[in-house]
Image 1: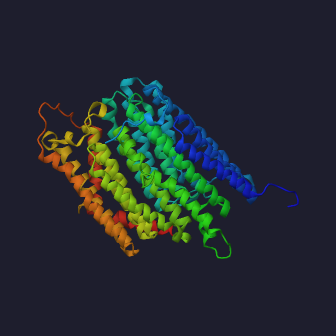
Image 2: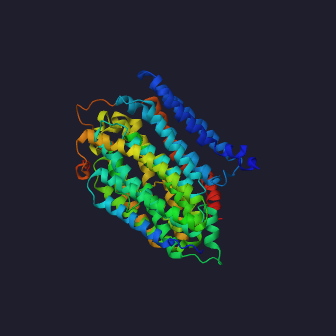
Image 3: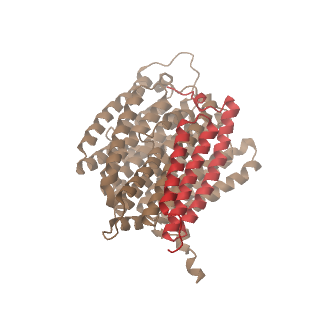
Length: 104
Length: 489
């Protein structure tokens, strides 16, 4: 390739960093909405990897996979926000530590 | 030219169960607003008819096995076995939920549709021949199950169960997907058979570290779905908070489908690199058996106890996966079939005795069940004895074949610890039987309602399934053996 382009590894490192940030957000944030957003961040990190790999292989498959992931993420968001809403209606809180009523 | 890309009739025929289930689920959703509250049972019958038709379709689809839709799915013995299994679990759930839903004044079409959609997802999962198809199936099944867990939306515990299941489930799925992305990046394909060929070929140098990392990331997703340690923490809370028929469904259907994809991906695609994934499956099997069985000892809530017991059973099946051989896969298949019947049966009994608002789910509430309802107590004992692994029940042969496969693969430590923890398990199951038969009923206890028709059918069917697998295991085992061998092509 004569044209200078961003190397594959940069994309992969960025994707790994985003994914790790998502994991950290999921584990350490206490607001349910923020936790949910962290999961979305993880999925988008994966999408970035798919696109980068797809470009590397000169295939269109990886691009198509990102659409599947986006659709699934949208479906998950619809169901997830509905669940979060019912939790909020019943408990009037969005702190994850307050949603812990079952022990033995 | 263009016509070459169109799927043939035979390919549609192989996807017939999924199509029937989707059509039935959609039809129920359309009919739901047109049905008055007293007529909702009709939708349940419709769901049952859809499931039975899909069962028939799954069986006849096996008459023309092979791949379909550009090798996205494959109908082979393995797929057929698990399709039949998850559809049967769906049937048992629909039969057993009528009394429960009526008692909670929560009968509606959505419940049946969601069960059907979840079963569609599981059918896609078990017949997937490609990682993205597998992911789509997994999500279809999971998203429907998240909603089912929180189906009683005014119940605080059901909300909590749905929230935990949803958050941890999507978290684990993201790991699975990241693993898929890396497999795609390293091999350039997501087809399981092609991945195997690439990993087998000597002339391609593939970064083994990247492949092993991807296998580990995907294992996180699978281990979550089958509630294996250390990703089992959600299971007790979710099973306790979810409506009991849903807990029965979750503990059998998605778990069987989860193990099916675990077996297919690791034996078919990652077979050539088994030295890199067997160690963590081994560790996971050991931890799951120990955690599940010892935590179950301390439980007083029967639903929670069964949740820990289902974790423990996931551990036994993990032992079969850790063998990485065809006999191990066959043993896991047999165990999952036996487990589905005995575990659904046990949950159905709990759903019957739990009463309104699911208040009576403690072990003490079982007192005197043998005199109050002898039949229920007797069938519950059959399920519990099978969960222990007493001869003449499906659970016995399930454990027998798993540990036999483990010994043949020189997994001596896992076998010894598996047998020891099964002995521990006998204590908490027998405790339930002792309370049912030895302790008198508390005076002033309100009468249990008689078993409804659907519940009775579900209970007898589960009991017959459990005993049939224990007395005549060979037919199922031969089928599992033949189709398990196909995985390690």
